Image (tube, rainbow, N blue to C red; front, side, top):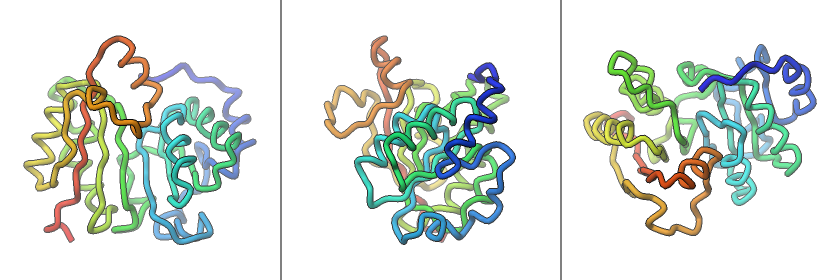
Length: 219
């Protein structure tokens, strides 16, 4: 869902320049240089669709030895993620206002260790299937930037999208594990909930979760 634009954010987000590359910022030198950007060599994990950043900032706080990059198309929500990263002083977080369809422009081949997709837009109409973040086209982009052991961690409350993702990933040769149609029934203590996850769970919605490993034949 696209939020109403807040013009004041265009200026306010600049206060968090250590954490975020805003709309119109220079991201062109990022691909292949993320270790230099973070000033260290560490696993690189990416969340596509950061929203207001509850998930990514908590994940980064729990795992300081991992570098995290968050991509979000809407600057109006990414501002809040940047503010959270700054308040928590998370030096292992960088955020970009960026369209995930251009993923291979911001990450070099095999540079990424893990990709998180949390509660992505389901694009339920068949004619919009190519826009789904688990479509064949997007899986091809993920395979290009993930390393040989790279994984996608996917969660959604939309069972239509979940079943579509299972079928598409299997057909494209991704190796699936940790598959469940009711994540919260498992009672996993280390599950970090997104803003949407808390809202949907409170309404009694079931959450689907899977882990997909990069196809080996794409190396």
